[in-house]
Length: 155
Ligand SMILES: Cc1cc2nc3c(=O)[nH]c(=O)nc-3n(C[C@H](O)[C@H](O)[C@H](O)COP(=O)(O)O)c2cc1C
Image (tube, rainbow, N blue to C red; front, side, top):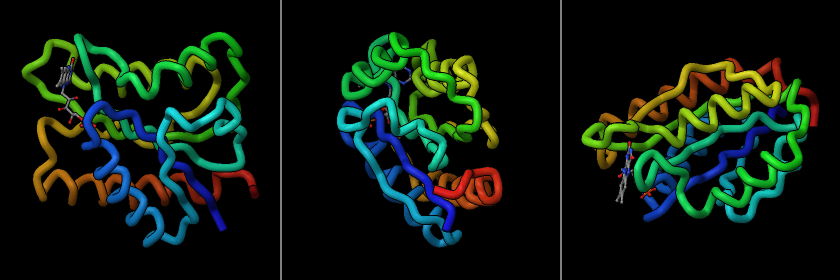
């Protein structure tokens, strides 16, 4: 079965709720998936055995949520070769801020720089997620599952 991990970057928990919706959609699409707080993730989460969904809010002025800073810094230090890793980004933000969904954009750029392949266009949620945003996120995840399927190495 194809596998995925949903990495949560959050300050106040909203991204975690969205992550649960993404999880449900990936599972409905036949994937084996789990949600993981970035605080608890090690860099080997990007070992290529699982597709990665980054689900992150933005805080400060376009900054990564505090629970994701350590993981990001470890990756910056280790700079692993992530070729063979497929990923997608679901970004939460608020377009009243100048750097809209910047944390999602940062992950997208950084993982690509390390050799991973973003196989589905980033999905941005503006403001507190309404029903239609959740619906959109689930549809996005179903589409991502389609892209991941066949691209992920047997884990
Ligand atoms: C102090 C603060 C700073 C924020 N900075 C940004 C920002 O720079 N860019 C952006 O798009 N959204 C920004 N946001 C909006 C959050 O990313 C958005 O509300 C998100 O849904 C929060 O998710 P969370 O509960 O998982 O942390 C900010 C929110 C707060 C409270």
